[in-house]
Figure 1 (cartoon, helix red, strand yellow):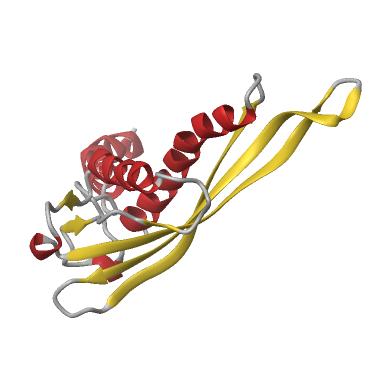
Figure 2: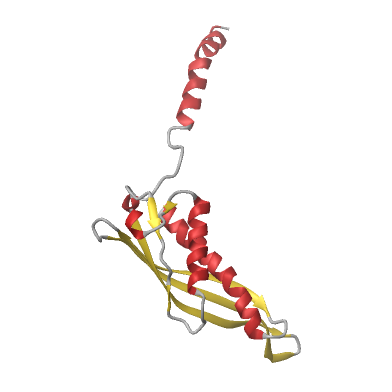
Length: 175
């Protein structure tokens, strides 16, 4: 009986330890990587296109900007002069590979995979220090419905979205 009353007396203190201890490692709001401390706004000028596919640089840049805005860790600056950091990007390559052949005809391809590679460099505007430079890729698959070039053009925004998600994940989470 004595042991039970001691347990009841210690129960509020034990509950408080569990409640307070469980939240010890959590923070409210974005947790930036160490190298991004002090960076709140990012300017994203139009990326450079090093591929043979025309007019995709604005599409990819806008996709990255939208993903940064959706993530919410950083704000987009209207110009490089108003930003803490500037992201310079190059669309280095777009690869299209056969993924699945037509049943009964292994010479014809029914589905393709596409990879879009981006090289970016994040520069602190005030000092010119390079904060991060990496290669990021985005991928998707698409079926051939008739015109291969048209199907490929429709798959580029999906691969760009995948690359933008990966890029922003690196910026906001550090990996």
